[in-house]
Length: 628
Image 1: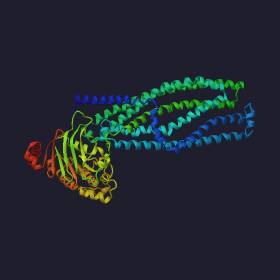
Image 2: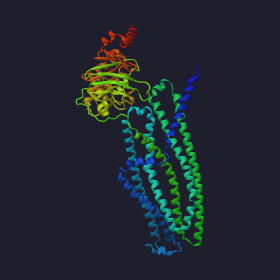
Image 3: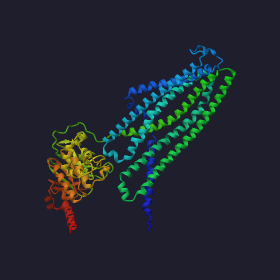
Image 4: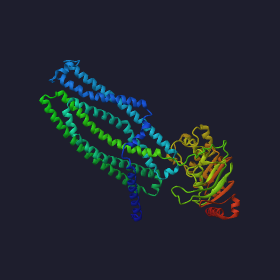
């Protein structure tokens, strides 16, 4: 039986592809502002950290450039004196080798070897500097990204950020480790060659300068076009990487909804957009290469013709003509290399700007002056006073509306209510991922806005719904709560979380690799690992975010026991849709549509009726029906 695809679904996929293309276009327009090399100045602090490497590179750069310019002079002596074909024997008589043919070739060989060694050391030091600078940039950008608040990532896709950390830093590595070296060496040798050409033959030099504009014109005309297309290609690659990261990060969802074909089509459209931009760049660059080669070779042949007539007339020696041709080749090839380097420099300028945008992004969560220090030891008394908050992405939809509530030290408070009531927002604000637009939140009487965010979060342990686990061993994931913990402390935390038994049954016990996201473990096992992580953190405040909402009864029972252990003597706040898990809470706070509508014990709330009693009736009656 064949199934006809829903036209609406096809139209939706097409719209998604179109919106993706529009996103590429908007991103390209945004990046188009990088039209100069000025962003590269932001790399100076990273480069000048290593003055020794920079000095060594400069020394061998100067030496290599000097030997490059000396080589044509050495060849002139080889031709005029070594082959004995020069009419001006005075130059040869002044040389130490006299009529010794071998001496001139030996001198040329020594210059060539010296040039090779100088070039090798120049390459080593600049390549090492480039690798070091890129490593520092990657570390700086990643460290900065870790400190940005969650609001930054609302409008920035993780895949694009990763693309900047990889693709863009690779471009900078090419620039610092290769292109800059080539550009500096080529500039020095080109200028030196042009100057020395006048000493050899001013007539030939003027002729070379006359055809120079014919060579440089196409370079600058096509160079800007190549630069724009190169930047667009970088943006397309970043966007395609972002799309792939999203789909592969949710591969189970993609496959569960049989969306492989549609996601593949969307990614293909992104890759094809990247290919189209790259093809335009290749076409322009190929045309530029053809035009430049034609102009350069044509002009060079004209100069060689005039030089040949000068040799025939005796105005210059064959060796001098050889020297001039070599200088002309150095100058012309230098211009060509500068053209190639210019395109790479401009690509790196765009990449630098993209990376510096990340480094320039500022977290909106900082300690407000005057900075306070949390009391020690911290009791964990929490208080919300008239707190109002709306997420930046939904500024017109309040998540909390004038909430006032206290969470007493050493007590367990449960937050219940329908989805969207504002329960998780309480946790977001307590962890200071966001700041409220109105009101204040205090811990032991200190406004948390005046505390360093890291110091505040160090006082909190959290077990999230579907708690994220990381690639690594079971022990690594538990030790994530406190990196310096010993093996015994890790094991004790696992025992307290009722996780020791299943961890010990793993092939390598606590050292068993769990893979990305620990998807080989059941939901209950992952949650118990997360609780062990929170137990190991040993913080005075514990947040449990719907940790049992999707678990079987046995897993729920084990997690409930573990939570009772971790919450003992601590300020504990638990969010739960299953009201059976919060019956032992010291106090239950009922929320609805961003407001607190009731609070009390389980018995008090049932007696008063209202929303809690309604939710309890729905859940417990559903449980009785299922049992029957």
